[in-house]
Length: 102
Image (cartoon, rainbow, N blue to C red; front, side, top):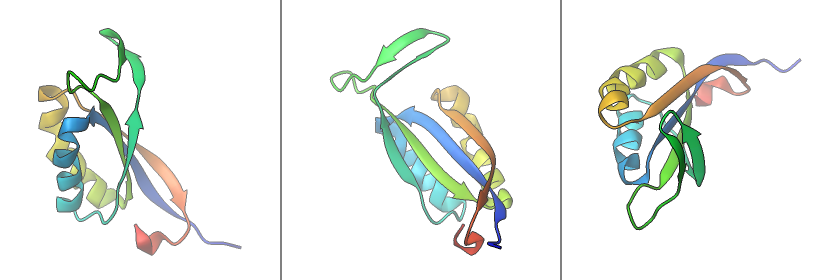
């Protein structure tokens, strides 16, 4: 049987212009990898939105998987930005194979 371990999957929705702040925070938390996924539209409390290159409000998801202790370091680092810059951060438990990589 394949052995799995529990890790945290973290998704951060942010403006494309701010993705470097997020990836820097990921790396500063000791997390070794991340992925950027473009987001073209959505709807939130303030209504619908679409990607807008001219206005600089394109959105991206920064995705990563980490051990719980590193995930909490990242969440603490990003907490002020969640309110000030409008980031959205979600995390949940996932089962991974080759847990030493995360």
